[in-house]
Length: 129
Image (cartoon, rainbow, N blue to C red; front, side, top):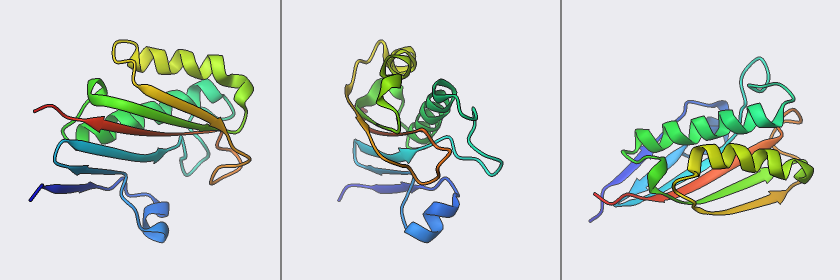
């Protein structure tokens, strides 16, 4: 049977919604949607580039907590409240994944979990031990 590892971020949403920040089953890793949420407001304020950078830092941390890394990522998904920021978000993605070039999707949504959040990022990875 494959080992099943759950990673928590300790957020309020995990408690009320019942999910894990990351799940690893064998070589497969799924990272739940990461935002720039913080108690005092989003990291980066209303700057979508700063929020995207924080999201990807959190993705990176969750990957590391499962024994994976950015180089293991095969897919990213972006949910944004303003698709006109596509190029700016893409530059941040390129900075994190320029050598990896995972499959990626970006879609505009009407809202995220809090009105001040501008972007949410998911990732999937496969670890080649």
